[in-house]
Image (cartoon, rainbow, N blue to C red; front, side, top):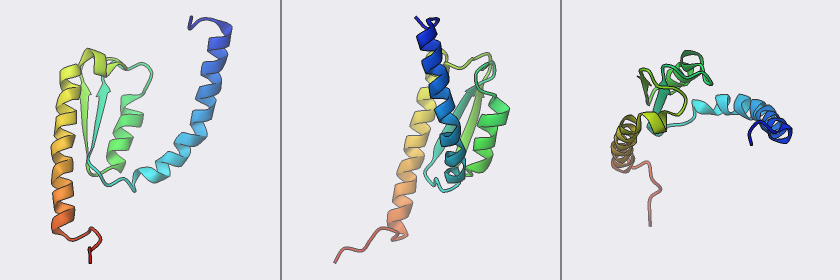
Amino acid sequence: MALRPSQIRAAAEESGLLLPINANDRTRDSALKLPVAILAGSDDRLVDTYEQSQRLHDELPQSTFQIAPNVGHMIHQTAPDLVAGAIENVGSRNATFVTMLVSESCLPKMH
């Protein structure tokens, strides 16, 4: 089905729409304050791990970055334990982040 001309055209149009969206998102990346886990496969042929994933990690000081060896683009299918561990890690860091916000009185005061 993916080789039908209509599917190829639709995929190309969708990809074309992502370019301006991604350019705008890059300026907002640094405003993100929550913990972030970035996972990439060392053998990904769709995304340049070092050009894109590493750049994002460098822009987000609260992020962690893991490269799964011998894994391609479908990291959630080929390295599910790594993905699950990253989710657990972000969840625990997020709980710490929320606790920190409450203890620093960053939340609006209730009267």
